[in-house]
Structures are given as structure tokens and as C-alpha cells.
Length: 208
Image (cartoon, rainbow, N blue to C red):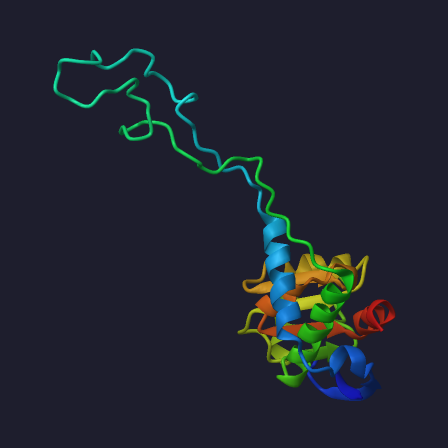
């Protein structure tokens, strides 16, 4: 399986052979769904908290005597049926939202997402950006040349690429991660993928 590689000016300069088991499989919808749910669940802080009737301030005195008033008996103005009373079975920080997904399923989801972008022609491979010093203007120019400037873009590069990280972090709708940090949510959330040739090789070393 071969894919085109572009330069920073947007011109096709060569073709590279890529692993079909990563970039050309039939996308597995269930694996991608389960992995996204698991990732979003892991991101939940779980800091939600409501107070029970024992934790709400006040309500220590019986609001009226037990008998003789004609009204229903009440023991506290902080009982759940009262306005301002405690909450029954409300959320607590102790709840664990983590969902387990097998390693094979996670890997299949990543491969499915990469293959999906490739099949939909939403994958662009660049040999190098050619930016020597951090420059947002220079990065915008490269994205314009590649015709990916008006879409939600995920740039995947390799570790230690500080210049491109700093050049792209202030551009609207652009997210940049390393090949070691690729995840299913970022892959599917982006409309286009822009991957360096070195990052393609790094991904294949891990997922082949």
C-alpha cells in the first residue's frame, strides 16, 4: 500500500509504502466506540457531590409537634421532601467511572481510526515542515499550502519537535500531539490528519 508524501509547499514529492494492516483495514466501529467511551470516562474528575439529610445545615429541631396540628408529621425541615432538604441517592465522589477496554481492542480502534481517515482522504503526510524557529505565521503558511487551514486539524509529529509544537499551539482548530501520544478521541475528533513521515514510521513500529 502506497501513500503520497507532500512537501511544505503542498507539492507531491514521492510515495512511501505503508503497512496495510494499519492504514488500510476495514474500520471496526464497535472498537472505536468502546475506546472513545473508555477514554472519556477516564477523563471524568468525579468531583460531583450532593448532601444527604445528615450533611445539610440546620433541621435539628422538630418543625411542629407530632400530634394535634392536623398536618402530616415531620421530624426535620432537612428531610428529602422539604425544599432545601437533603438529596436521596445523589452522586458522590466515590463513584468510579473507569471502563476497561482490552489492549487488543484499543490497538484495533487506533488502526481503524487511521484507516478511516485514509479511506476518506482526510490524511496528509508531509516530509517536514521546514520551520527552523517557532513561528505561527510560518506554520499558517504551510497549512495554507497543504489546504488544511480551514478544518479541525490534528498534527502528529515525533518527540522533541518543539519548533512545530510552539508554532502551531496558537492556531485555531489545530491540535498537535506526538506519535507516542496518539489516542482514539483526538483521531476521530479531527476532520483532517497531518502526519510527518517520521511519525508514520514511528506509528508503524508500535502498531505493526
